[in-house]
Length: 129
Image (cartoon, rainbow, N blue to C red; front, top):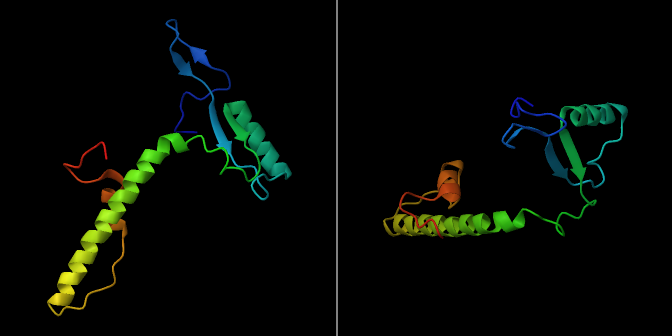
């Protein structure tokens, strides 16, 4: 809740109609094992509700059918897959040059060091790709 200092159960607006406080909504999968019905879980969900955190349960095990965020994440996923392919091509080229020079390096793989390039690209990359 520290991330949402203006969290409250009902929306509040200033005199100009600008939202200044309100609830947040989390949509979660409600499949088996994800919705705990014990007393402590129910009390925690009630506390969340009273503080303005509304948990919306989707159809059990149906996230593949109703992925609202796919429209937003689709282009991002395509771009990251393309950057992974480019990185792997670069690593394969480096490995081939090592083999030509008689060096035997490690296997080709991605690491956490590659993550910034995969997610953000490189300076000068076309932002439309």
